[in-house]
Image (cartoon, rainbow, N blue to C red; front, side, top):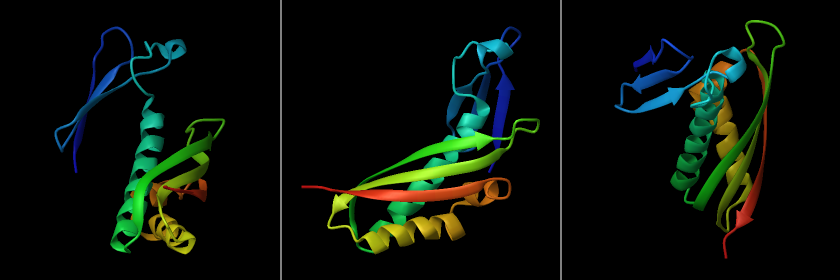
Length: 141
């Protein structure tokens, strides 16, 4: 896996990331740090990537286990260290899983498998942060 991150400069603190899979996105700093708020902060992209990684795992595991899943959202909240390096110290993931006749045990198992085995991002962040999770199931009619 590779990625190139290029400062847009010379004014501001915007960066364009180009991923090895051929996608690009902008990251920017807060105005008080010289940014122009043109994109998410770099650490926001780390948090979002972690949510995407976990949600991907949960959906894939539920599908493979024969569950009729139709939606999955993960809402992340976090805390960071007060001093540099301002690593994540706490992350909470709240999964909202939609489907028809989803088994709570299957949803819980999928989340635990992602957390303990498959989600590289959350496992890596778990080295500095306490990661917790919970879930709710919304039945499709």
